[in-house]
Length: 127
Image 1 (tube, rainbow, N blue to C red):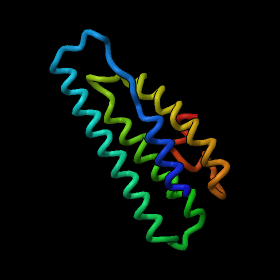
Image 2 (image 1 turned 90 degrees about the vertical axis):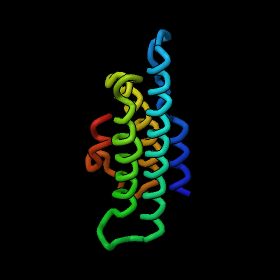
Image 3 (image 1 turned 60 degrees about the vertical axis):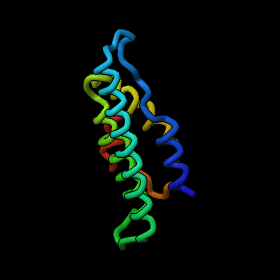
Image 4 (image 1 turned 180 degrees about the vertical axis):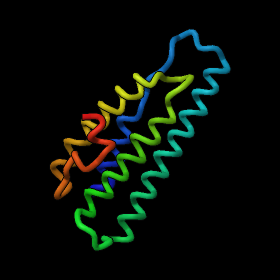
């Protein structure tokens, strides 16, 4: 259930920033390609998260919190960085990450036992 909630939050708050209206065709095509790669990246991040959950606990403390942090890092931070460039400025992507992670953080704090934002660099960087 937690995995589906996290997927829904990441998917629903996916980055949608667009460049100026005067984008030339080549740039539009580049943006489409960038967004496809971003979607592939976030899907892979979720598959990795599901696989980690299916594998079960590894005996180390705070397992769910660590796996949730890994997923947020992969899906939001790493995949989000793919959007910087022709289609989006670093500032626009950072603002989107800030917004996305703040809404996800509310869910994590209530549903993941032992969640500590200070221990998750991806979240810590955006709060």
